[in-house]
Length: 159
Image (cartoon, rainbow, N blue to C red; front, side, top):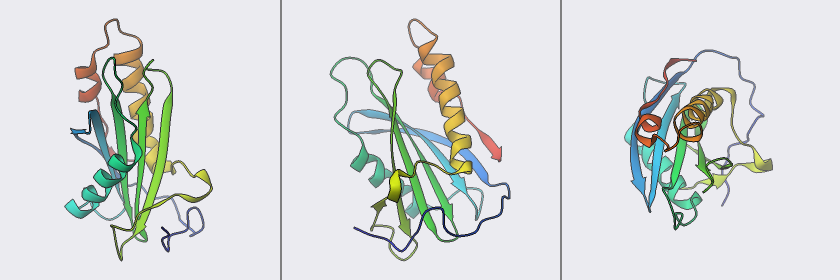
């Protein structure tokens, strides 16, 4: 499936964007921590979140047989379309796997994987930095891991 969006081509000047941590959700045996980035408003509308949920379900492998399965998504709405980064932590809690999806505003049900293995833009990386720090602080450094604190850690502001 293709989309009219081209990653990294349209000239863009840096201006701060809204970056927020949302409530986590369950998806096919995974606990998914959710983030939203918007160039248009404080929070994206529900149809953008629905696109992100579809991308999450399309990306995640089967949950781990032993221990919890944690993932995250960063949905980003911009003038030209919507992007979603889906990440999940390995069973040993150290390796991050990601997939990135995009769709233009004309049809948010037509998602495509980002070309050239694109991972994230500078605004999405603010959420991913928060994710990394929370994972290290509350999961990797703790025995036992403090998943509730990891899920509660977040980002909220203009970046």
